[in-house]
Length: 273
Image 1 (cartoon, one colour):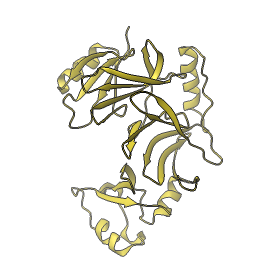
Image 2: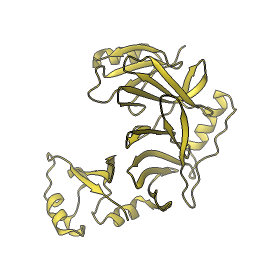
Image 3: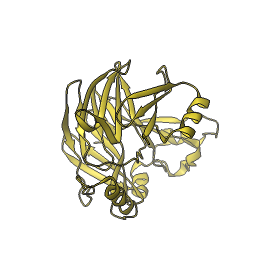
Image 4: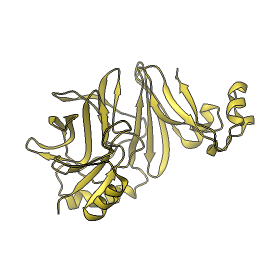
């Protein structure tokens, strides 16, 4: 049976859902939740909320299981807004149908587009004509898993099962990048960690969840939602139950200490030194 993935497009894109075969061929565009449900029920299909990035009339598709076109199996496929193929790249040496992530695999910084695989330390830059290594993530005391590159699908699936139960697995589930900083959400085994990498000094700091909260001085660990050229953008919601007495900044304590359940989230713009 052909494997399908249903990509959820960002808001503002004409069709909300885009279904692809594993070979990367467009099958159908879907703009109705009812049709989406029917499609999932009648096809071998999963839904990916983070694998499609739209930027400047280009659609950047990412698949952890690769797109099997004539140039070989690749993680990345770039099309125009009418889904005409433009480029495919980053050879897929390890296949998994999992696509766990808290942010898009692909993002832009200063009009340059980058992508990453959550089980690999590499960040690639994508253009209309190539895909080249941009950076390699490294954290003292932690290492990404050594992925088998030439195993069968069954062996790779077995490896993923073992990896999911490992207390040592490191995975990058979200990367947010400004001009100077990379903010990376990690899991080590099943424990959440947060890493801050200074691109100018090539120095990194990594925190477990408790130390991350303490380091922010906000009685909460604000979750990143994006980046500008200068700052990492994080969000605090009323559901985080912040104790204003534990916030170091009095003005900020006044804002978040009075949040009600139906209030809009508070956006925080951070720089690290």
